[in-house]
Image 1: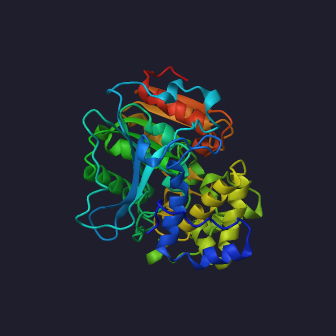
Image 2: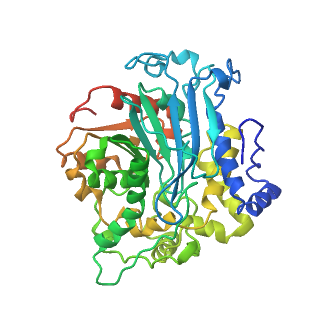
Image 3: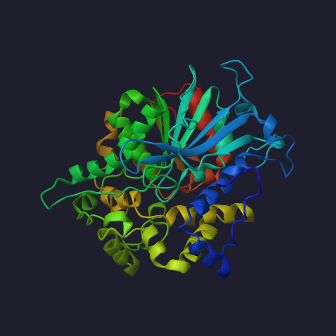
Length: 452
């Protein structure tokens, strides 16, 4: 069991052959994935300003814990991070997030004050209810859902600021079959006569039912739901199915909004083999990078892989000891702005959550056709949402923000569209301070359909 009381082993260098071999060899050890997650989340424990921490965890203002929440059925456990600020101010009192002097903080809005005491739960005891933590009266539940190929660790740069939202309690989850959650077989059946929407709905239900059961277990009556990319798509679908449970919906660079007739006619993939025995995919980033040009050989190969339900994770697993190097090539390019130690920690985390057995990853080609267009577009469905909704995009996002603007015009509820400066598809990580302040304003301030 990884502990934050002792030093965690450092992540390997990105392009170390020996480190890659060690990483690959240890991929089946569950503790390695937990350690990789703990490295990122341990940044919650002693956030410092310019390397200087002024307090200890005992006097920190925020408490966080991460572990598995057991659901009904076989092999259905949701990895969950719960964060709550220790309250010393009266309910309704403003926090420092909105009024922070930026000259006294770094690029992530961090201050010299140590942040969080972090408790990591790595096993489930049926008598241990520590991961069941309902919101207190008057407390707002904020549920954060990651995108495809990611996990709750991706938001490590945002948790501190978001936890300072007045009277908020953060629940960040790994979708069933992804991240640190359990990996049940992703099963679906279809024939040439099965309506596409029925197959898509079946794939969506794999995730939506787990989120709804988690809400029931945590006794969350109503939530503010934040979803990124594929997590934004699934969050919107959840909100459509359970509108009474969502107070506000925040879609961060959501996939699946635009209509594309060709995508809607594309053949469905073959069902995955049990226990994630599928093979590879075009690259370790497919859902988070734009498709290749239509005429390229790469696109033809990608389409063929997509139609055979070959995923980015399965090709990484298929390449064996070369897998860590493939992930490192992506991580070092996409997140080059991170400091060296952060980059190593994030790279290790991506590899370990991707090297687990295939499960929820196989939903990608069921929900999306080649080119990352939805088989059942949200454009046709968002008009039925019953709660205020915000669309957020990075200014250099490959996801088309104009699709969100078009969808707004079909909706009858209050909406807003925001673009985060100096950010791409991973807007929350690219510019955490601007992203967090936008979330803070969405949750704490009035806004209407005319707001941009």
